[in-house]
Figure 1 (cartoon, rainbow, N blue to C red):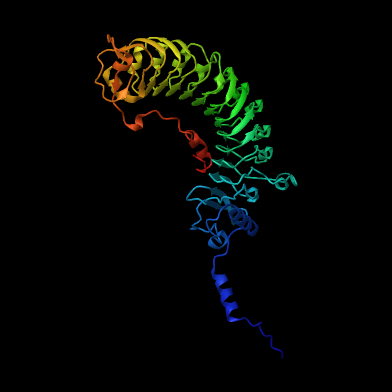
Figure 2: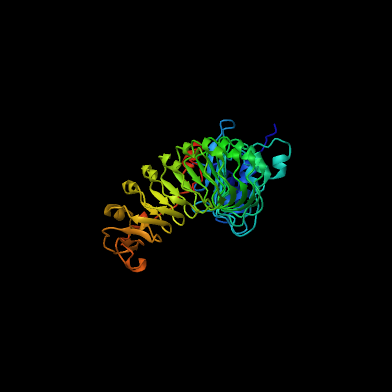
Length: 457
């Protein structure tokens, strides 16, 4: 009888087999795992990703900047989120360029590149073979965020419209140029679009009205021209609209009155002119209206007094004339009113002193006259945040002691010059100084939809 013999195995080989069997095996698709390692090797030198994280989706993994979820379809883990650029997430090496391989991760929902592309010039690219090859391209990507990348250049690729599940597109503080591709306006799932702080040009296409689910739209700090399209009024779910620091001309479109959910509107530093829309008083949810530095050259609209939720109203340096409407005293939630550098005349409304939430009032460099109607408690509360300078016709009765901050108003009956007799106010705490609106104010809405994956920077 012939006896079968097992192949001989060396001691070292036997030990290697045992060690391999004892190690936790990757619970991921091998192709997806290899794609992930290729992405990491092209982006970051922080560590050897293959050896340090052989099983990156394993529970308790020390890899920060990655999230995984187990699929019910194949019972294995898939990468759903990647973060690059800022500690403690993987930092980007100087030679890093945009990794189009991310679109080959089939379950990726969110990806962030923050302060990542800072040295080597790169462009946003979607591999054409992936996007256009067989027509079978499918992406579940919901959030694409590229922010503060000075070496990110070129135009926004039209192929980005292939990401049909995209809800949040943030391309802010980069070096992108050219016009917005009209294909973007086919992304019907978008709830937040931020293209601010780039070098984008051209007009805003009428197709912007197709983004019916948009909650936040930020196109500020670019060089957009032309009129604000009437179709902006079709974005009825919009809460934040920031078009400031561009080259927009003409009037604010009448259709803006349909944006009943709007609570932040910024149009500062453009070339807008003419009368306000007749129905602007219908924006009853508006809390912040910022429209400094536009050549308006009209009187202040009384309709603003009907916007009872207003907290900040900024209309400086826009050529407004006439008197400040006394009805502005009805804005009981007002914290900031900036009307400096205009041609306003008449007296300061007496009712302003009853605005108990006011902490910043700037009426400087106008043509206001009469007695300042503020009592000592109001003056003390505002402190350095009250500026009446440059109104030679104003005076103050019973002035408080001067001990800190220049107010720029003479005591009533004083014959001295405004320089020598200008009143001063106490220095308030730094936290009471005027502050700008926080950019992430409205992003809680989108974060709730995406399970907290929102870029809040």
